[in-house]
Image: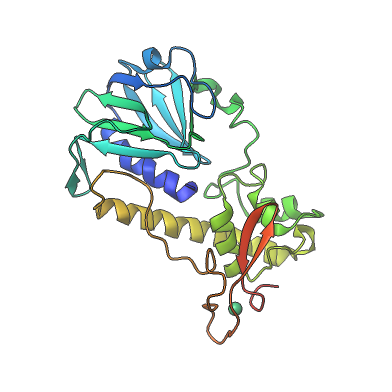
Length: 283
Ligand SMILES: [Zn+2]
């Protein structure tokens, strides 16, 4: 499931073929994904110049000359394929149309961006650019973890008195937006905090230490995604799913990476999701 760094990587991959370019034709092959597409979506995209691409939380935002913004959510299994243009050092010819190619952007420069989503948990919507903060998927989101509004003072204040496990608090998109299960596990390991510890029972100093660690973990993953783009080898032109090295995520039963620690990584289930941690290093 794509998290913030993967979404950032997909955005970086499609930006060179979309930004400043005109969508010659938008091909919409079904009425919906997770939710119905907006009315006349193909018509509203066709002929539009793309002014720029942004990311908010796990959404890619495509600003159009019409003063509308296209919101793209990759969902669980959404993939973007770029063809007909160079990506990094590689040129990908147009593939044959495939099952689950739900939306295709035919750019005037000959490039093609295909949104393929087998499980259809992805979504697209159109909104007035000026009113994007009112969109129902965006309006309740907390600050961006890499932005200035997310800082030590803010996080300490938001965790104060909270009776939920720290894992759930960091996954709460109203507190900080875009953090998902994988990176929260990694952050808590680096912080030495047990995922089940009550958020309000963590000292202010330790809570504050989470902020730079969150930034580090996400920035490192974004950098890894960027280098996967430069060394782009997948034959089909798919973006955003790159090889990660995790310290705890999905490592249940494997030895802890901390020097001098002889424990193995443990998995527990919290709110229906797996948490991975070292029972010795995380308290
Ligand atoms: Zn350990």
